[in-house]
Image 1 (cartoon, rainbow, N blue to C red):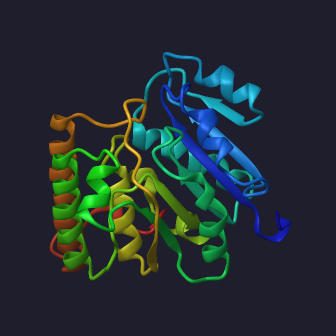
Image 2: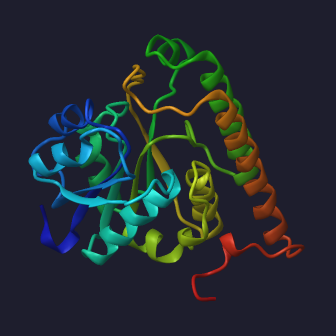
Length: 250
């Protein structure tokens, strides 16, 4: 890798023992200068396997949540001098062979934030195993978010994401939720701070080993995503100030 543009892949992990090695195997050699796995107190042997595979491993002593896991990922990546950070779930739901392509698009300045887009057609998404209720909710929420935020993304709810360093240094993501809505908050923040969002098509891969939140938590996630959009609008209109949209330290 180009040492002048250090690329670090981060993996927020929880019980990924059965899928981690497959995820890494698809990633082309030289895709990143370093791969960091943050384990959120898994109950299986994710940590032991990650050490055996030569990853940089950070283990939470108690389960802190998906958002908190990402916070540790990004703190560590910035501390280690990353200029490009690619986040991928280690559950084999996303095609890690696209990591170097995403990194190159960020390095070339085509966008500041890039997401893997799993949804090109309804047929492809459903044949890939995506439950119909998840497909429908993803489509509906993505439509609302695109219209509300003036974007044109294929989906807002991907676990494959890339950021340039400036994004992570600007957005006050430390103030975000420690739960799943962290992802939605981050993208709304990226829009607020003027960063350019783009996406790249990825295949749909749902399987029993892949991580997935239950229906009830999905509903809460959707409602909290809408709450974030309202907070964004009220902040922009100067009706109500939200810490999510204030400069860090500001």
